[in-house]
Amino acid sequence: MNTKTFHRLRVGITLFVLAVVVIAVVRNTFALAVAGALAGMTFIALARSKARVLIDEREKIVREKAARMIYTIFTPTIGLSAIILLLLDRNRLFYLEFIGIVLAYLTLFIIVLYAISYAFFDRKYGGEGDEE
Amino acid sequence: MKNKLRVYRAMHDLTQEQLADQVGVSRQTIVAIENNKYLPSLGLAFKMARLFEVQIEDLFIYEDNSGSLNDGI
Image (cartoon, rainbow over all chains, first blue to last red; front, side, top):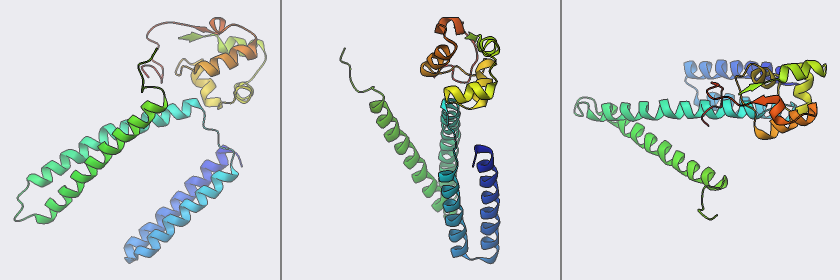
């Protein structure tokens, strides 16, 4: 299986999983959504093991840039959303305050995760010492 | 950074796909390098120079402000 076939297969599996999840949400069956997602992940893992997918240095840089952009956009967005939700009238909109708390913890979690992974990769690529 | 990859590829009668296979990258990467959209790593630059039996400086010419994908990394 080459890269093109793998990409087509991946799109097909993704659409299938999406359809299953939509049906599960409409029918209100949580187990079906989980089963559909797990089946999709298993199929993609199997297809990837059979395919000769080339991830070269340009692809890696594109992925790094995309991940960095997602972090840069996503973290302030949910952080600001958390602050706004926490500042709303808590007597009338208590459930929004709860969502705000969840988003605030999520923001902190992402920042901590980023800091840990930054420290790890900094050490891995030789940023730990000053010796000459 | 400018490069003469397209010229050397033509001189050796190689397609982008063949060159990509020989240096272990995708064809899109070769296209990006030829169009000055991507600066190859040192390892890849050496591989290509070795393949064409030239010095790296013959293949790549350094210039400021190229606007490539990996500028500023």
